[in-house]
Length: 613
Ligand code: F6R
Image 1 (cartoon, rainbow, N blue to C red):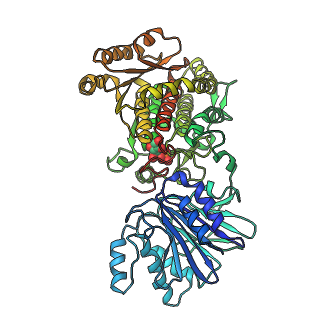
Image 2 (cartoon, helix red, strand yellow):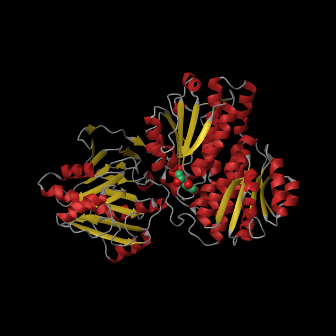
Image 3 (cartoon, protein in one colour):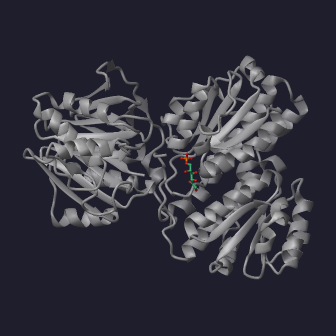
């Protein structure tokens, strides 16, 4: 979803901005543009399509000067086209804006502006912002005051950057609601702005995160943060530890492939510092979980979207089984409409890679409003989901660039397993032997993941056999049922093949009618407590002529004798088996999409960070 980069300093802004936007490509976009102030004039280059088109445009018609702002747009109002691409300039040509979000009252504002004679040059909601700001400025007030008045008129969740030729030394930024982040990077005699850290990480690691309803005036000399009501804010400066190198593709063809392989390291890091193997105990200090708090929890709602929600479904099994607390998983976009029963003994646990998903944030806010305890498991350090939570667990995966989530799926599985043990321990509902065994099992995880990585060539062969399928059913049971959902989501989102995940036991209630020679069935049949049930599922699919692809535990001759293709996984303790069984499904989806020559890292219509409802 829209990426924003800004630069204030003595260097030419354009290359810095374009490089930064490249690092945000993972968010998904359909047009791009950049504007600089040069000799007191605003100059803009923008076009529909990928950043490479903007680079061509800039090389034919160079753009010098600073400060500058740039944008990658994911169309909401108006088609992806050059005229709708940001930045948008005011009618006098003295102000320019880039924006992420949706101006909810834009029609009303546009009507007012049009009646005052303002001419609109695009179909976007964004353009209203720059015209409003210019109208305010025309009344003779400062740029800062004009910007503030504008920000206060805009409804919805929005991030805005504005520049004016009348005060050409600054960029004014605002975060108006909860959607989308703004990170301000602190340099030496220069400063940066971006919607996400990777965009500026090569220049600085010292950053400030703007909170909701805050604005910042960014000049070469400094950054001044205030609320939209004009109160001065002393912002916290964070030092970011992961480096830009980990956001490079390296030896891999796509980020998704790289990130699949990175899971071995990410899972190792997930355990680091949190698992005391000697004592058989878990430490999650950022969660701020005391024995008193653990004992009073009566219900947990896990809320998240897409892949993160499927991770939450596995978490439900783990927390209910280990900690004996009732858990309900509610999709982020539904939470606030389902009138959830929340009181001070209810936890709302949000899971989010980006930490900026609008629906997940709205669910957290609803949980807070109703008086619950709000926790999050997030990957993006400093993200909103981390900051508004009472306690959090950071996924130790590093930046995830591929739009299809992989390492941000397996990390929260392990996080929730650890959380379940910690809750059980603090509530006194687990005996020492069981606790020690559950903790000891964690040691196996990175190696088990690594062994699946070693089977990639075999998985690629299966991908070749399946590359032309038109649909696929994914079936799982028990703790591996959510893995059927996740496997199907991975296939559909990057290969555009229709895939459906189902609890295997539901087949006979309808979907079995779909099975014939044309409809392959992928069965998750590892050696877990539901193994026998899955064997009978494979038999039923075979009896109807379906092609069966099974995920099975190494050495399982029975499954081998029945299935057409087997994706082998090493034997794993059943409560950790989803961490292992999902890996061949990620790789299968990846290779099918790569063989079909598709844009694996940026699938059509998708954005990495969905910051609108
Ligand atoms: C699928 C995928 C999405 C995200 C979902 C939530 O591969 O990436 O389904 O999981 O949009 O995003 P986050 O985790 O950033 O809240």
